[in-house]
Length: 289
Ligand code: PAF
Image (cartoon, rainbow, N blue to C red):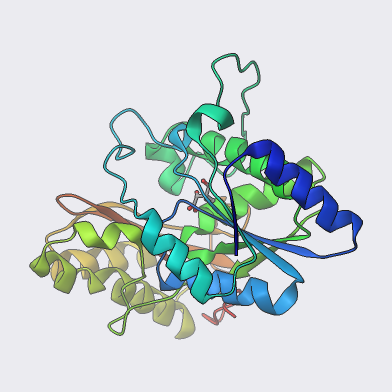
């Protein structure tokens, strides 16, 4: 496995790979790699000649009161995980090189961000599309892999790729869960033991909401209220939001008669957890694979 830290070297190398006809699969990450990331790597390995994984904790996507400094980092562990998954190139750029002081361009998003996490994390998705635009230019992938746990991120990146004509196929990958259903996340390490036990309420609440649709309920407000009630009865975590929206447009629906996302975010003392399910009007999961 080759570890590249310089932007210039990464772009030159990707260019050479492209010129020699190799397909490149790209897995962007912020490190602290877990099984969720490994499932992205495995998918990328089966579909591409070369797989590039990037590790970059992107300061632009953290708000002033968010956990940029505290975000868990463990490069040694990440290198081992990448090696174990036979990754070809690990790209670890430095903040100073990615964001020199004389930048003049900022990116803006006009849809898909005023709901769910975008509502409380102002500027977050602008930071995500900025870094991805740079990373896509540096790694030149034909396919890029994203976990569906961050389904709003997937919807926003889908808009980025379509609106700005990136020649990249986005591949959504099913959320990897612990045995009790909790979605794997780098932030789960911040949960206390009792919080960890109760955090299963997110997935159970989502399943409860999906089952309501499965058994014929179509009213989004009713479903959202029931899911909130369920989650509140199972955990002392504080609900940030429960929302049901069209997917991937992320607009309100009058009734569930198309592909929708049911999404939740819950605050615990040192972590804010998110989770979602995407399903059709019959409650059948649609993007999971
Ligand atoms: O999902 C993440 O880890 C990040 O948002 C991403 C896509 C690597 C961009 O920084």
